[in-house]
Length: 281
Image 1 (spheres, helix red, strand yellow):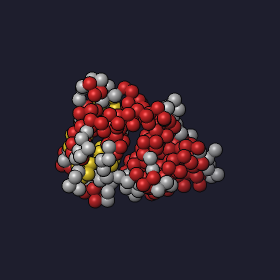
Image 2: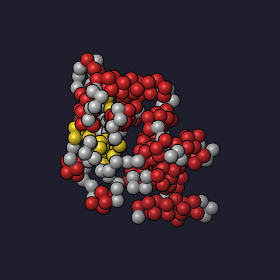
Image 3: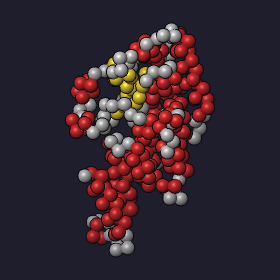
Image 4: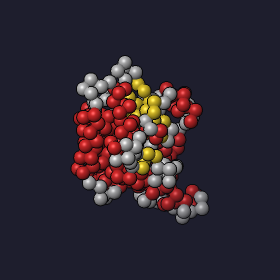
């Protein structure tokens, strides 16, 4: 079956073709996670997230401000107390590079309460949205975080790997250098649309495909999501890496130089090489 028509690609395409306002981000994340770990129970995980939202909603006054809700969620998630059975959620320092695939899966983060910069902002965002807060996922280099619109209409950066602390742009720029061009073209430090969020959540599946030695599927998924998130630098990098792995597997591991590639295989090699060059440019 061609990678571009695989069941997983068709499912994600259907999500991306849904109007932005009708996308259920919680279910989208769990559907993608289940493609990585088929044992995931989507309905049970949705129920857990709903229960967290209900618990926090009951603890808040009816007229709670966005700031009050944010502080309540910070306490609920990151400070030990009876509200979380003295088991706060925290960064997985056993995998400080943040590259443990299990930590990226939302059900695993809910269970172990150890996550990283994919699962941590997403869970915070999902619960915040259920509390009526205007929040969105945002990107920094090799990093994701939450942006909250406060009651004055200003967007605040919330760093969920640091207890959800409000964080200045300058702090991110100091810790994760980013060019003015990347900021100007919207690659970083802005609230993402739901379509862009689905594309960002799909990056873990692309990485999973690469880890599994399935570069065609990785390339097909990157091709699918890029039109919905053309400023997401990570997708461009994943796409390039996928094509490079195909070239390495099918050509460079068999032939010493491109001149040694048989004539009947050279058109495909050339096509893949051109695609890589276009991505780099």
